[in-house]
Length: 77
Image (cartoon, rainbow, N blue to C red; front, side, top):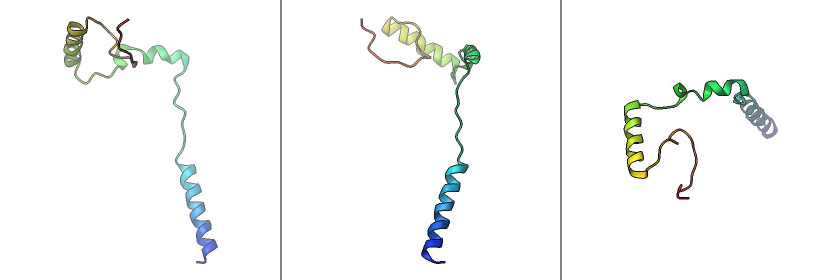
């Protein structure tokens, strides 16, 4: 193959690879958000361990909850 044909084949293969990868917008509809916020949808591999961790956190930090939401800050208002 000559150089221009090889370059064209390489460009075509790259374009097909980019187009075949796909793109999906994973958005939750407003009417489905109550289902996604259900307690059964939370990740807890070991519920007993999660409960013990919550108890230890409460005992040491004097705080309850907030285990399933992201956030930051020291919380020392």
